[in-house]
Length: 50
Image (cartoon, rainbow, N blue to C red; front, side, top):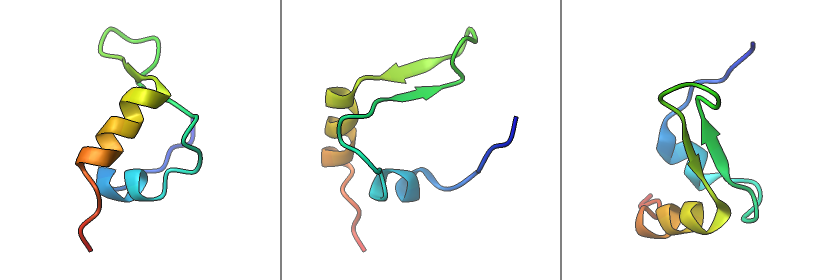
């Protein structure tokens, strides 16, 4: 499966749609899923600084 690796700050800074959630390692034992409201909070408290 193709993938793109980039710093988390860049991903959050350019998040394309505020109604989208985020799934990391979906289907694995170490998966993490953030619904849109939780992701919005991550973006709010980690606002890009420069």
